[in-house]
Structure formats: structure tokens, C-alpha cells
Image 1 (spheres, one colour):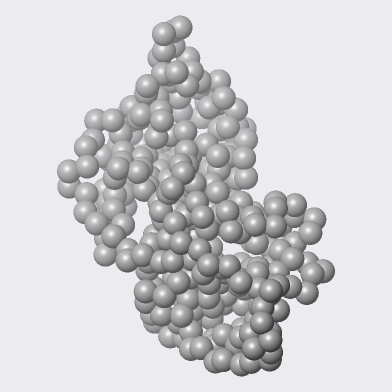
Image 2 (image 1 turned 120 degrees about the vertical axis):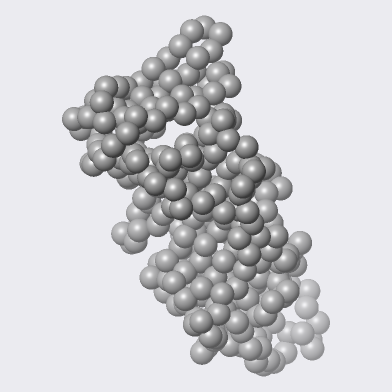
Length: 314
């Protein structure tokens, strides 16, 4: 899936200009000065690649994972799924990037990509944020590779990687907003993390209650050693807002919720919602070093639902 090279690059007016090969062992012809203009569908630049790597790692929960990438004028969305019962999304807004260029702002580009490899590439120089690594992402056309061009701060050498793209197989529509949303709370992510740490992860399921009445917000597991409950009263300092109109009790497979917990290490606030069908939503707010807002969303089907009635969004 990968091709490596070392060159110098600049992005100018939505075109990639290959200026000079400087890789080790290159012959005189490849090392000589050359120019080639290549028309691009999309190009962007981020000065701190670890910011993207950290956010994407929030939705990386298994090896050899694939993601669907959606690029439009507002930003870049990455989506991963598990058996149509769990969907994770992260959206990187256009404003996060130092440069963001679409050849046609009305276009929407969607393709699949080996997600674990993408994150490894972003971390190719390590995860030490004290020595920033810039990254340029370049997408020439449909079916073409996604090019990553990384440059370590203080080093006049560029590493470029060609990452093979795949045709998108579609994204499952969980129809979350098409059903009434009776209950939602916004709370401190640190408080939610502490609550999950109290639960028994040997239990196959977790019960979640959201209600306008007692127990208001409850997390519960039942395992071999007994049951564990964590309750949040309505007036808890953990809540920024509490909007519950109907009592809802649903069970979820705990192994599906575990991938959502990684985001709590980075998030400042988390919105918990449950729609009429019992589809659970976690939305985590993550602030970058430069105080930009990024959102990580998870949708999880309750154990009482199967995947009937859910469609692929093309």
C-alpha cells in the first residue's frame, strides 16, 4: 500500500510542483533539477502532524482497519465501522489547516484507505510534539493514491508516501437524527472517564439509563463478581447541561463501547444522546494545541437492535 521517496515539494494554487529529487542513492538524472506540474483535486497542509494523528487514533480500535475518507469544502471526515453496529467519525474542519484547497468547492471526494497505515505514516518521525512535523496531503484524482509529504522541523528533507486508495463501499446510515431524541446530556469528559473506570469490564453488557427522574444518568454492569453502578444526579457538577424528557433503559455490548473510551483521554466535553430506537451517540469535543475544535462521534446500536433497516449511504 505504500511507496516512499524523498523530494522537495510546494503546493501552489491547487497544483503540485515536484522541484528536485534529493533521495539517497539517486542517479544523476533523478538528482538533477526537474519540474512537473500535476493538476490536483485536493491539497492541504497541517504544520503539526501529531494533531491529526492523535485525533485519528481516537477512532482506531483494531489492526488492519480501513476508513472511508470524505473530503468537501468544509473539511475532511474519517469514518470507521464495525459490523454495522458501531460507527466512529472524526471531522477535521477546514480551519484546522494552514492551507486547504479544492479544485472545485462543490465537489465531494470519497474513498477508502488503510487507516492503521495512515496513522503510522503520520507518526513516522515519532510522537514528540516538541519537534513538530508538518504534513501535506495531496489527492490528484479519483483512484489515485493519497500522497503524504512530511517534513521534520529544522531538517531540509521531505519524505513523501503514496498511500493506495480504494473505492468506497458506502457508509452505514444509522438514521440517528430521523428518530426523536428524548435524552441528551453534556458533561465533563474526565467525569465520564472516571465512571467507566469503576465498571466491571468482564461483563458482556453495559446498561445505560437516561431519565428526567431518579437515577437520572446511570451506568451499570453485571459480572461474575456482582453488579456495579455509577449514578450521576441531575445537579451533578459533571453536567454542563441535562435535557432528559423520557426514561430510557438500554443495554449495549461492552466490547463495542470500549473503543469509544480512548477519546476521553483527549476530550474536554462529551455529549451523550439516545434516540427513540435506543441508538447511543457519544460526541467528544477535542481542542487542539492551537485551540481549534475537533469532534469525534460514535454511534452504537443497542443489543436489542439488529442491523435490519439500516442502509448504506453512498
